[in-house]
Image 1 (cartoon, helix red, strand yellow):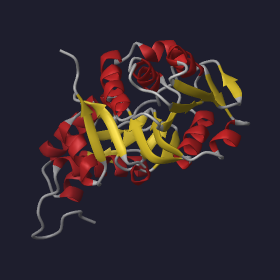
Image 2 (cartoon, rainbow, N blue to C red; image 1 turned 135 degrees about the vertical axis):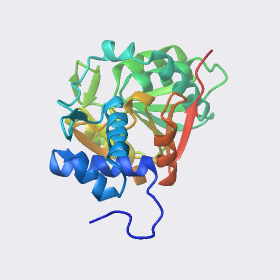
Image 3 (cartoon, rainbow, N blue to C red; image 1 turned 180 degrees about the horizontal axis):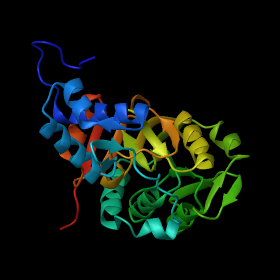
Length: 271
């Protein structure tokens, strides 16, 4: 079945490419000729679309078409992830930290970007009477220098040394009993169809608990994570209020995200 139909307006490239990915996930292989017929465009246009998606790491080109990425991203240790896109993470952290006001109660999810937010919060010496809940030991340590201006509550649970984080059991006892103002969530992927995803299951469960415990939900993800899909589904795009990414993000993908109604903030990079 064609997606456009006779006399209809052409589908925008960003929408067409997203739908191509949807077909690829269903079929495991898509042919250039079939996509051209399906979307009522030329094979040259389809090849350009597939090349663009391959450059973003969302598929792999093969003779006559495309297949899914060869393998999902494996989980990096915290120290390895911390040095990747460090400038982008600091930019996101500055924007996120500026959202916090004296007297707020927030939740900081585990991750290198949220740890950067913790450092940015600790540097705001005018900020007082803020309570921060977290499942991250690195975040707790980053905020220690801001005591007693910032009160830090660490959830209980089982230690994951790879991320210096705490997961179930016990974490839900704390997160299930609070009503925080804002949650800042990290992730490994933000996709138009698959929503927010994460690379491991135990921390995904904690992320869902954090979302349920918060009134405003903010996903913090650098531009390399846009268009990516990881193992575990955290939530749909409709379940979050804001995405903070950096200004290196693909303009077409950002536009498509905004068309869903999501508030997308582009953090300016330091020059």
